[in-house]
Amino acid sequence: MSVIYERVALIGLGLIASSMFWAIKRGGLAGEVTGYARSRETRDTARDIGLCDRVCESALEAVEGADLIVLCVPVGAMGDVAAEIAGALKPGATVTDVGSVKRHVIEMVGPYLPQNVHFVPAHPLAGTEHSGPRSGFAELFDNRWCLLVPVEGTDPDAIERLRELWLSMGANVDEMDADHHDLVLAVTSHAPHLIAYTMVGVADDLRRVTDSEVIKYSAAGFRDFTRIAASDPTMWRDVFLSNKDATLEILGRFTEELFALQRAIRTGDGDHLHAYFTRTRAIRRGIIEAGQDTDAPNFGRGGSRP
Ligand code: NAP
Image (cartoon, rainbow, N blue to C red; front, top):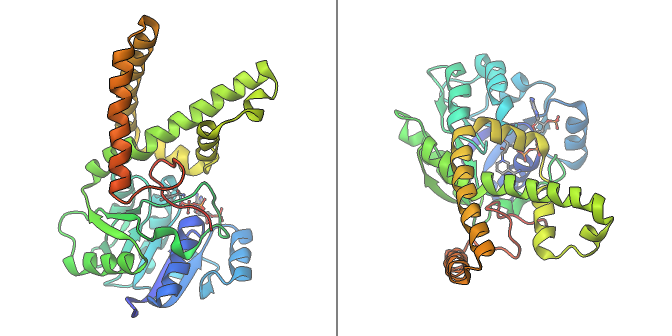
């Protein structure tokens, strides 16, 4: 493979940024990758493990001369980072992000960017419950989707180049508009995460009653919930606060369906339960046929640790 961007800057050095770095290195896709994280600890770790060709002491230094700048911080921090780097961006550069919510990021980041840079928001649908600079690996994006969410009027060449990068990092690429993205993700990822958080919270309450039985007899279904519920609290707080409307819409529908199932159980309506579970089983088969299956339920994040 060949170099797609001469210089790439990664702002934030956690799971997604470190996976991007290793995937870029695997493919020889950039001349130089610079990186910056806000804490000294993360910057030191990055230097220790060879994450980035050059770890910088400021975001401004990292973006200087970069052709592609990737914002890899929690959704709630994107606007502040954009404000910080805006004045140092090279004319003609592309700014992108990897945030799990798109409308909010576009509204928070867009206004800070000068006219002479391209803004192409993106979201790789791949992750694990691990975070931080040591958690990344080159294969994270292999055969996963990356959604590009370009705003109207964006230079098609800038979009194409970013598409090329994600394809070369192993991902499949699609384009979507921001509101549709946020609704789809509320269904496939955000609401399921909230349900997992809730289920683990309920079990924890129960544990107080039944001592350690919940942990001791924890079967696969519940263990999967605990894995999801171990995801980074800052990232997920920001996801819910910034994708409020779509998540609440889906949770409203979820509650209605839950009530219907509750009634079926109470009234002994086995036909209803059987028909419902038959429908959901077909959905699972569809996912497997689409090649998006993984060993364990992981609510659309797709990655697994090596
Ligand atoms: P992560 O491993 O927790 O890393 C986050 C990075 O952002 C760290 O380097 C952290 O710096 C920095 N950071 C945190 N708060 C900040 C702030 N207020 N200002 C500046 N920098 C800050 O996170 P991640 O999983 O890579 O997620 C990064 C982005 O990718 C998020 O927007 C998330 O929505 C999106 N995403 C995540 C997943 C997933 O499953 N994890 C999947 C797809 C997309 P320090 O280390 O110095 O604290």
